[in-house]
Length: 398
Image (cartoon, rainbow, N blue to C red; front, side, top):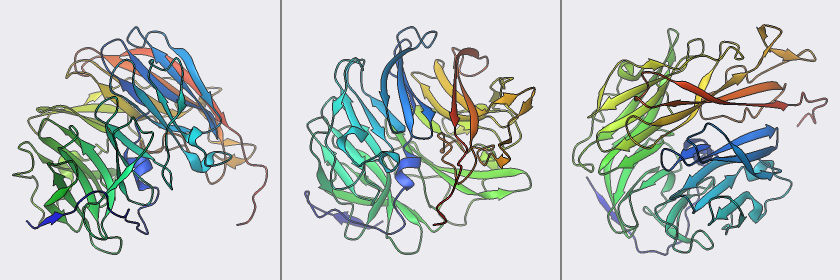
C-alpha cells in the first residue's frame, strides 16, 4: 500500500466532522496498573465528577479529586504518573483545569498544557512521553508529560480519529480525509515522521484502536437490525503485515454481534471485549489469538432497570480485570423512566456515552464496579456509585 512521509513538526490538520469523535473513542474512566492500584472517574451530576483511588484491588475507594466538569478519561502509566482529561465543553470556561496531571498517584493534581483546542484523547507511553488526538482531528506529541505539545501529521489534509502507541516510535492511527470515503489504518515506526497506509475500507468509520506487542484491533460498528448490533474488529497479529477481515467485501459483523466494546488488547494474544444488547445482560468475551469464545455474563445489579452496559473495563492480565457497569437506577422496584413527566432519554446508555449527556430529561443513575480473577468466568461486586442528572426546567429553543 502507499506510504506517506512527513517531518514533524507540521501544521496541525483540521477537519469537519472529526470534532467530538475522539472523546468517545478514547474514553477510559476506569484504569488499573496492577492487581491492587486503580483509579475511577465518576460523574456526580450533569457537569461535575470525582476521581477515586483504590490500593486494595477495588474493595475500598477513596476520593482524590473533585472538579466542576466531567472527567472522561484517565491514563496512568505507573502508580505515580497519571492524567485526567475533562469534557471541557461542559466546563464554565475552557481552561487548563480540563487537563490535569499527577506525579504522586493522585494525591495532588496540577494543570497540564492545552494546545489551541481540547485534548479529548491522550495516550502516554511513559511518565514524560505521550500522544494526543484533538477534537479537530490533529495528532500531537509531548516529551514533557503533557506540559507542551508538538503537531504530528499523518499526511497532507489527513485528520486522525484515534491512536494507539506502543512506545515513542511505534504506533497506529485510524485516519482519513475530512470529506467522504472511509478511514485508513496507518502505522509509524519513527514517532510520526513517516507513515504507511496498511488498511483502507469505505466502511471503516469512527473506529477506536487498541494495540499491544504488534497485535492491533480496530473496532467498527456496522449497524443494527433484528434485535442485534453488528460490529467488526479489524485485526492483525503481526504488526500489520496481514489484516482480517479483508477490506472487501464489507463484513456482516455476525462474529461480533452484540459485542460493541469497549475492548482492550491485554497482551499480544488476548483481547477482552464488552458484550450486551439493549435488553440483555452485560457480558465479556475473550478472544485468544483472534479466536472468540462464548461470552461470560456479568451479574445484572438489582438496582438497574434491565438496561445495564459495560461502560469501561481494565485488565492487567488475561485473568485479572475490572468492569464498570451502569444504567438507570430502580425506583420502587421499577426502572426510572421519567422524572417530573420528562422521559429519561438515557435509559439506554451506549457504552461510549457513560456520562449520559442528555438532550432532555434526567434522573438517578447507578454504576457498579465488578472484578474477576478467572478471566470473566465469575465476578465479584466491589462498589456502587450513584449520581443524578437534574431534569431541565426550561429550554432555550436553540
